[in-house]
Amino acid sequence: MAILKPFKGLRPPTDIVEKVASRPYDVLNTEEARKEAAGNPQSLLHITKAEIDLPVGTDEHSEEVYNKVVENFNMFQTKGWLLQDADEKYYVYAQTMNGRTQYGIMGTAHIDDYFNNNIKKHELTRKDKEEDRMIHVRITNANVEPVFFSYPANTEIDKIVSEVITHEPVYNFVTDDNFGHHFWIIDDKATINRITEIFKNDIPYLYVADGHHRTAAAALVGQEKRKKNPNHTGKEEYNYFMAVVFPDNQLKIIDYNRVVKNLNGLSQAEFMSKLEQSFTIEKKGTEIYKPEKLHEFSMYIDHHWYKLTAKAGTFNDADPIEVLDVTILSNLVLDKLLGIKDLRTSKDIDFVGGIRGLGELKRRVDSGEMAAAFALYPVSMQQLINIADTGNIMPPKTTWFEPKLRSGLAIHVLE
Image (tube, rainbow, N blue to C red; front, side, top):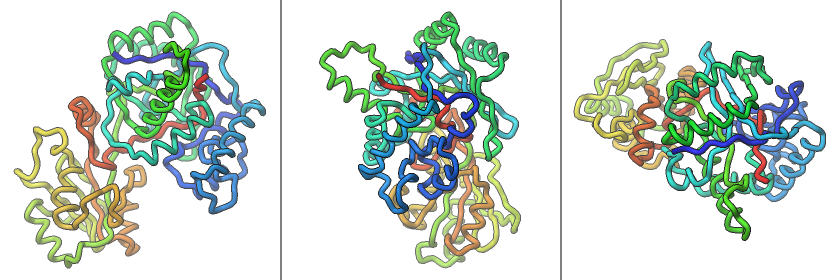
């Protein structure tokens, strides 16, 4: 069963939370972070992407940047921009997008659950990215940004959350992207204990939705601290890391699309002819066309949209990986026709989150930067759970969760 524990959040005062809260470190590059934090010394980006406070061109993985992280983190606390709660609490963090709200509980997960697979993963991690986040956890001695988990929906937890949100939120603001962020504190000890009990007794697994590298980094640093502590008891705060856990029936995965730079030496006519071996092709015209169901794709090439439907026998619905549209596209188009073997390393492909809209695919092809674009029907939460439960790994760039968690609403200190 899953372990969830309350913690003493290090949080911004209510009057500056909108200034402190920022997008996660991995959804914007250094230049974008500089622009976003410009004129705002209280933005958490000064901690999560501290290179923005150093000369342009500074290596974001340099010792100079890591020293700046520590300096800024200490400064935020000295100035009172981050204040620690006196007692352990759970928090409810809700997000609203396009009129739909999802409600998560912010607490801490246990590193043992990561290593014994009670926290289930669906993506591979890269060691270089793990190490970068591990350094950040080590030098701040904190989980500065939460990871995004899901759990099988539970009616009693739903009832507890429903009661909590009848009160005024502590934080309540709308960001520039028109997403609402709402935050409540759970400080009733009986309620806190009950939440912990429900997870311990009734929630079999947690699922990583977003933040595989942060999850791995947090667990590995906790493991390091265990080994270095001769008086380790198992109760230390470093045994836990910060997570926001959402019921699976409230989450929605949006599409994660592909653009390719060339047709692998094929003319457009040759490419279309080869596509017809595996797909039924229907020309849709110049208006944007979005896939409407599983195994249906949208392709944009030469100023026109096409509907591609995978032919029977080209996929296996009984296999949790082979049923995925990202697998079908990779096998039948990217690999077979375009020679793109490794999605992680190929320079001939790029990925576009569905939050940018299919107009972004059109723009990149029309500009001449890309030769063609492919839009996919989104993966479902059930598909993600099936893959995680069977110990499989999704292909790269399969899931895109939106809205992203805002960083800075609470920080988990490890000691």
